[in-house]
Each structure stands twice: as C-alpha cells, then as structure tokens.
Image (tube, rainbow, N blue to C red):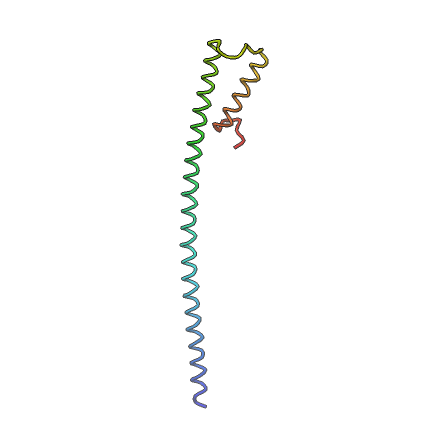
Amino acid sequence: MAQQPNSTEEAMNRVLEAERAAHAAVTECESHAAALLEAAQQQARRIHSRADNRLSQIHAHCALALGQQVEQLLQQDSNGAGAPSLGAETHELLAAAVTRLAESLTGGEGSDD
C-alpha cells in the first residue's frame, strides 16, 4: 500500500505539469495572436494611406482637367467661336450645373462624400 500514495502524488505532479504546459501554450498563442493582429493593423494602415494618396491624385487630376475644359469653353465663348448664344436662363442653368459638377469632382461643399 505504500506505493499508492506515490502513484497519487505522481499523478498529481503530472496533472500540475500538464496544467503548466497548457498555460504556457495559451500564453504563447496569445502572444502570437497579438503579433498577427498588429501586423494586420499595420497592413490596413498602409493600404488606407495608399488609397488616400491615390484618391487625392485622382481628385487633383480631375480638378485640373475640369478647369482646363471650363477655361476652353469660356475662351470659346469670349471669342464668339462657340455655339450660338444661349438665353440667359439656359446660361445660368449651365453655369450652375458646371459648378455642381466641379464641386462633386473636387470634393467641394456640394459633394456627397
């Protein structure tokens, strides 16, 4: 019967060792998960930054192209080289439409962004 207390003690020691190993494994997994999360967040920040830069470039390009087109139209109008003269009401509607389009393309006040 002297062997039974030893086997119980050994079993308890094995359980405690298994518990320590499991705790160490959980701690290692948590650390690995935190590292993966940080890496994913950094990648998301880089993607967001690149997308913002590209959108800014596109907005600048559109604003420049729109400005050039408007300038050409105004130049044609001042030279009399454009279409026949529009009525005042049509001219105002066209000017308002151009203004709204410019604002929406350049992120101005009238933008839905």
